[in-house]
Image: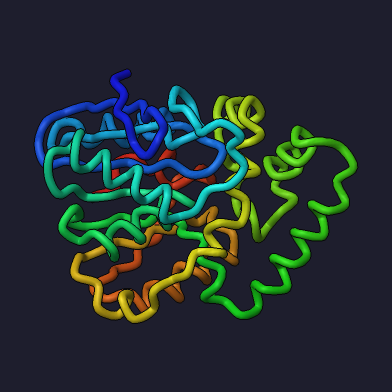
Length: 255
């Protein structure tokens, strides 16, 4: 995989197909390989670019990596668009990747031609989610072991607000996450901590598609509905991937 330097780390990326660029941004506890089905489906009409976000897969992380932000992740994505895509791209993200894609679209519309946001975990749009987030934090505080035990708790689906729907991750992805516990911990809760620019949502300059599935947890489904009501030029779609993650089980959906 080729790499590029982005804000002190090496980001590994790959591409498939030819045509308009589509940047694929993975969720927490996954790597760029999770996009393989969708990249294959797109390859006859688009240039699908996937990458391992900082701290995941073949990409590096800063020494002592303990915390990141949506904005930091978005700047990495911007570097991919500028140097790998070579021009404005459709940005497609899942989970935290969807929030990163949304941030990039709002702050750097010059780099984005459109967005697909798959199960964006923007729970700050849901007042009742505050209690759920607090419950999850109490569960984390009760973990007696080290980082590995926290990752196991996260991957088990026992944190419905901080890790909604994560138990649907394919087995190889979960195994990769167990090898990178610091990266899981660095990303916990950053989507809910993102300072969402509400005024920019209403004046977004690019079209977006917000995707959920029949397997989407209720909190995520409600958050997606709340976002679609606030984000200009947004269209909501529900797909049926047979209980899998939308971008894994419904790889042929239109961008």
